[in-house]
Length: 250
Image (cartoon, rainbow, N blue to C red; front, side):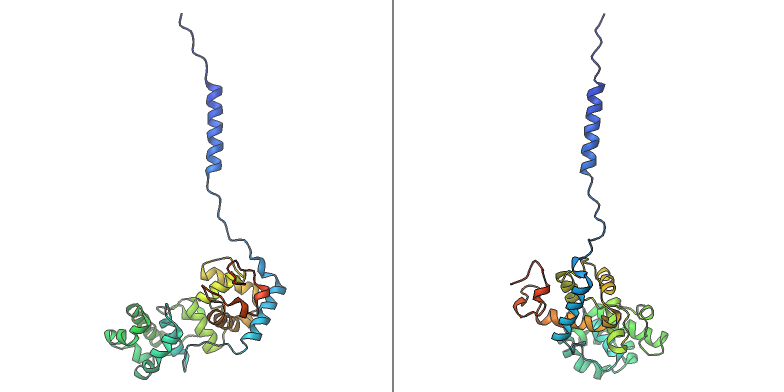
């Protein structure tokens, strides 16, 4: 009579349990939301705002414009381009195209060459002409005064909307988050998000609404003059004692 083989179930159970444990430990950790920035304590935020007021009491938008429409066009052109270059283009651009009607019915190939120095001129031409036509057809030739309406314009996102509403109309609908504001918000630990929309929401929670417009201008000025991306001039920064960024130069 053949001998029965030994049962291996205990070994299988042990192996299965081990595999289950290993599989569980191998699961990727949930990313979740970034931790709340430690630097958002009200007293520290108030000190940062005070320092910004001391350094940049007259900070404002550096895009030259005479009205809300010109500011809208210049802001669209400023994407991936410096304000200095946009202002250079604007010197002759608004003489040739004085209003929304002129832009709306411009010759695309000609307008492309007029704004070529700002880069991405084909897409910008479509956005400027599309926004101009929408303003004429839907808003009686006037740049709308609400975020909901201004976001319906081609080429306009929240950053552009906040620039125009805040600077041209004095309407604090949000916080402008450009590359400077994004970088400084992270460095100052006011937000730990990388997405501009999320950073804006973080800032709107800790910055008083009456400061939203000025705060944006001040942070942009500070980013251009002192808190550079590669070599920040920390020794010249009046917020150095409040900042604990990892890439400080002092």
